[in-house]
Amino acid sequence: MKETLTLEAANAAMEELEVRKAQLSAALAETGAKLAEAESGLGEAVLDGNESAVGAVAALRLRVDGLTAGLAALDARRAQAVIAQRRATAEDLRRLAVQKHTELEALERKTAKHLAALSELEGVTFTRCILPAQRAPNGWERQVTAATTHIDFCDPCEALRWLSPGNPYLRPRSRQLYDQAVELEQKATEIENELDPQAPPPEDHSKFLELYGSKPAPPEEFGRAAGSFAKAPPLWMR
Image 1: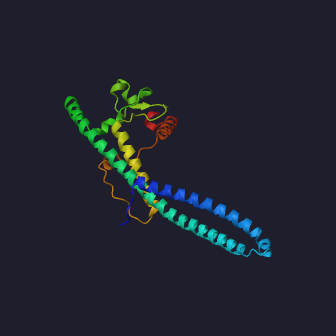
Image 2 (image 1 turned 30 degrees about the vertical axis):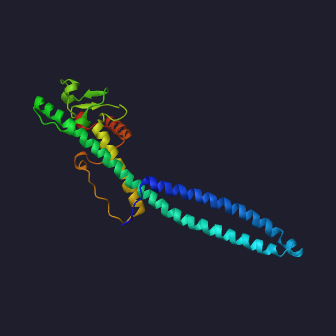
Image 3 (image 1 turned 120 degrees about the vertical axis):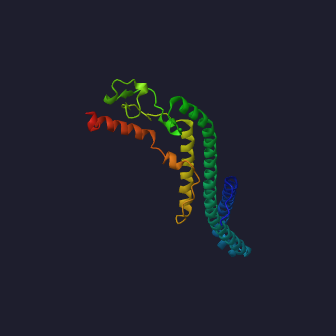
């Protein structure tokens, strides 16, 4: 089983490699300049009897080769460090998702008491499903089937919001927490699939997918849907 670094440790390892790469690159540039200068005067130095110049040029060439090899090895090590960093990022995203689910569970333990009290008052069983169904203010109209019903008492099938921008329903904190958790899990899955495309998908420990469904469409999708509906309302409304 592959050992996963913490995100902090993976980031620190990457920073250390970047510092070392800068050091090796600077040393290579300096040694290369010295080598070019030594090679340009090598002939004259030997002609004047300074045969030690040959050894100096050879030493500089060896140093250039060594620094070049060191940079190549660093690049290979950096590629592995990038993988470790990406894996640590995925682990961190999943940890944050668990935190969001924990917050959601705590919130729902509180709201459950109020939903139960409301259920008793209204004579129907209310669940958390009613929370994302709170209409946004303004723009709502009654359909013809509810012509005599006050708009505040219209159910979702009796009221429409025409051409108003944004989501027609308010997003309670519980839905926001759920969406954030799902988005974090999706980002983690994308990274994991990128690192190991053949790996099976990670087990989903969320209790909420079967009740809330998949990630909702972005707000602009609601606006486009409303516009299309206004241009071509269903036959029973014409």
